[in-house]
Length: 296
Ligand code: PHE
Ligand code: CO
Image (cartoon, rainbow, N blue to C red; front, side, top):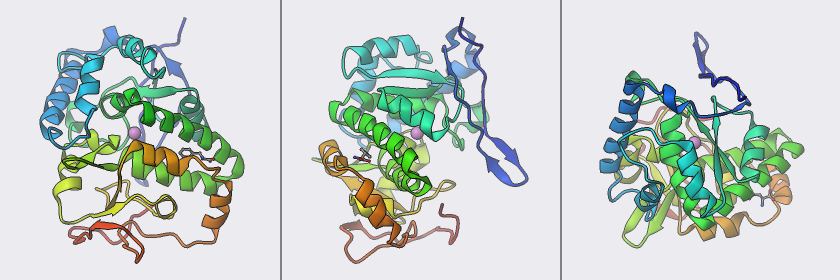
């Protein structure tokens, strides 16, 4: 018998947002989703379908269709897994909320992607600070059908397990890489810049902002540069990094990072909005609306 699935959410205290971690893998309690929860999925699904038309990367909609994802109802994890099993061999596992780093890396290293089983409340349609089912399933899972991206995610998990054994700084560098690729990455395709980062794909506002706004920088992918760059967790990104292909991501991250971590320790960090001399600048942001502090 698997344990009852809990809904583990971050705490909002007078000191701000406090993440709460949980490690259990749970069965998706699909029969318990309420009509309101299915409707939240439907509203978000329809809205992003419209916003991401012409903005999401090539295979994103096609992959959602291969999964049979639609606005009708919250998808069943078992159905998703049947499709994943016969394509890239990934599986999704239900989780109750944020995982501790090492637990998360171990899942990825074994081609398991953790998906939060619960969905946000109607009043959180536009913004929720932590990952929920919509972010994880709608945003992250479609790319697991892409062979190169699927391999990148597993390699990242293995690298994470290794970095965890090296120390806190190594983990911080890797987290920045995840942030600026898997969560907030852009890709240059034949018809222009497109979104592949799940943090953008699950957000209406940022889907438009990241491509159309004059405020943010858009800069060509540079591994070491990214691992030095701080980021924003409470606002749109000040800088987006642009890859040319998932193969480029794979190639750049293939080497052993141990010497990279040593070198990074001697280099200064870069503020989220800074542009450096060596940057491959696609757009230099106007910086409009940026708050001065708050980079992590
Ligand atoms: N090659 C990296 C290492 O040795 C692991 C890694 C792979 C990191 C893919 C990020 C992405 O640590
Ligand atoms: Co995410």
